[in-house]
Length: 108
Ligand SMILES: [Zn+2]
Image: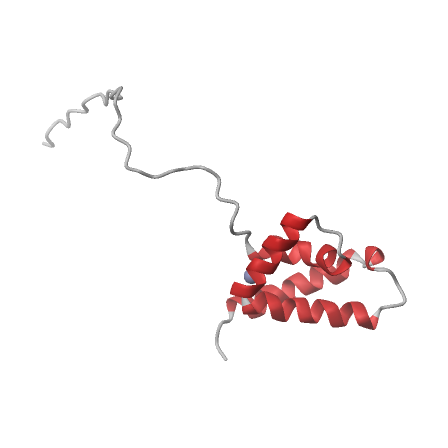
């Protein structure tokens, strides 16, 4: 025979003691994947100042993204006949995939 489990109804206390965790939006860090998407615009100089600064700040802390930027740059150079705007989505996709693989494999 199993003892009856008394489920006490949890009453939400009006004064919930919240630990000091400020949940404001901290726009300091943008995730790599977002940086990657911004890099074409970044190279184009199409980002607004704040966004550009954030990308640069990220690049300072994230060598893999710098490598990615390098690759992107040389990719763009190799198709320099075309303006960056016409960069095919495939290219960006392929780069993103390459980026992911070298970003997750952190070994040398
Ligand atoms: Zn990054």
